[in-house]
Length: 449
Image 1 (spheres, rainbow, N blue to C red):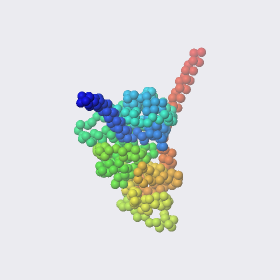
Image 2 (cartoon, rainbow, N blue to C red):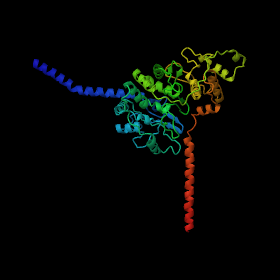
Image 3 (cartoon, rainbow, N blue to C red):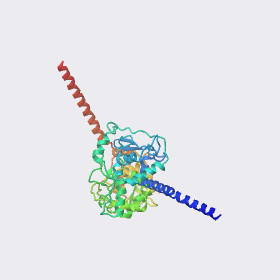
Image 4 (cartoon, rainbow, N blue to C red):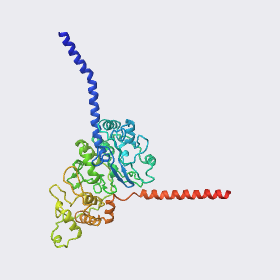
């Protein structure tokens, strides 16, 4: 009896020992998937690859660019509509080099120039997450159809030769661990430079002007270098951490547009340690003085009386403010009840008025907290320009003003890229050269006869 019991116990122990490697492997797999999910949040993949009201990562989101609309693709593990047939090598080439499985080039609206810095280990984790944890969606979104010659994806191969080709991040041994972690995230997954670095005529990031501020066509991504005047050199580390976590900071800054989306869907979901690391790195970026404001602000918040509004003598901007803004921001713009004050507000201390215009047109709708409604259907272009100019004159930098024409352009998605005109001009030149060449050949043949 004892022998039989001993054999049973030995069998159970043997079974447990044999199952340990399998359990360990399953645990490692789940850990890798969880890491990949976190990295996908850090890379803000869902912001572009999930359409409003659509299924996660199924694509179909229209991304407005200066050369036309680009539709994001399905990156679920669907074998018919997504990336289900991608190997790790295929996935790596798409994410870090901008080359699809079929060999065609992606447009740099996909920030592969930044993602090239992702480490090999993190690429494996991302691949595990997308292939094993994301639900497949067997629906393809609309095809991108940019105007000629941008619809020829092969042209991106030449662009990549000049402007892409980055390599995985290499730590700087002279810097701290927290700085290196922040640099890895900010330069790579978080792709901060994609929005905040000016671009050259060929739409590539300008060398030597990293994070110095840039127009995104509609919203303006400000200078976030360490310059105390043009950038965020006066911000404390806690200001920056709070801003990334919530979209607001005590220095009068609140996020809007693409940055608000990045905070809602990405930065706010990162760990406090990673937010501190990003802030540490960003605050060390060399100062750039471009895209600064004049900062000709009034000495103190103005005291505005309702008398002129009531007797009709107030300027049109003041009337528009009283009708549409004062309920939340108060008569003198002092804010309250969780709503920001307008005096010393960062939106009114920008080199251009575009962000204030876009806030009025589109509103500010954070995932948490109080929202600002959109007024695009209530105010025409002239009224928006009048209201925004009043805000800058009264609460911000009076030298910064806008026009109804600029409001119209922003309402329509921003000015088209000069590349479109250049391309059309080039097409005309090519057509003329073909005609001239054809005429020369025809004339030569006639002479021979």
